Length: 398
Image 1 (cartoon, rainbow, N blue to C red):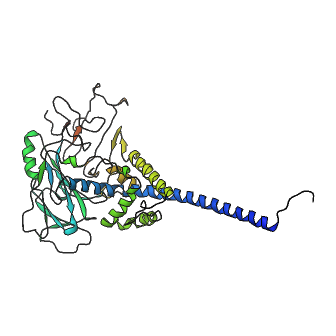
Image 2 (cartoon, helix red, strand yellow; image 1 turned 135 degrees about the horizontal axis):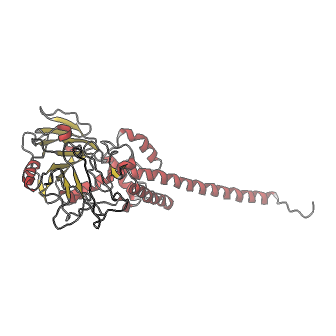
């Protein structure tokens, strides 16, 4: 057999044992890597899905820290100007207001006055940033009325004449908009919105607390960066899912999130190993980037428009993207927002150019309430100018 070397039985077993250990370690390494990739993919989807929920929670907490009283409206006393540098994209057509509703104590009664045909809208948004209905001209008309905003699972009776509105979550954001037709109309619009009140069902026989006022109620909605939380985002999500249980039709998603340790009362970042923490961190970064880059608008003749914004947005990425800069974008049935950054030559709009928007005779925008063309800077804030004119529209003097 020549000089060929054959290991004895002990050598063979020892070598085989080492081989088995090496193979086992290799398999474990590959399994761990595959597991991290799976965790990262699931966590990325969970971040996008949970983004609106934590965004709304942060805004609620921010209002509380700034001593804005829950279950009471706070209203702007003036229209937006170029001095407002918090909430982007303000309109200069309506007075704004808000109230955070805490329904944990039972229904709240919303009272609205007769606005005599004046456009107004009170937009109701649940804890997942879903617009679930409106009280206002389009949906309920402009007559005086009372509406009970009812928490999930409440089965009590309401006073006669009070219309029931079921809220999907116990925390609700109510955003108000009241049309102003020029400076001379401002006092009348202010008087209308001061009649928006809230009171508990137990205090139905009493008058609701009058709204609070401030120069700009929009300043409580700055742009927030949730990605700064890193992996702790998922721990915060687990806690908030206890307070705001997920919709039943999202049960399949929650079951998948559970595979990565994400869900109600789960703390996947707390005590996780370094590889899992790295996967969660990458998921946050990637998911936040997807939200920022998502485009939910439709292109029409060089303009972008929000046709896809609906009462309940089923696509998690669309819902997250639509709320990234703050809550309160109208659904398409309530208002359409057309915007463009470029002129007919395809070049960016600039103050050095002159532009003309033409409407053929008899073909002004076919709207039921109002329309306006507003000029924003590249940052989507109003542009300062010597005559303090930020828009032209159906109420602009000739």
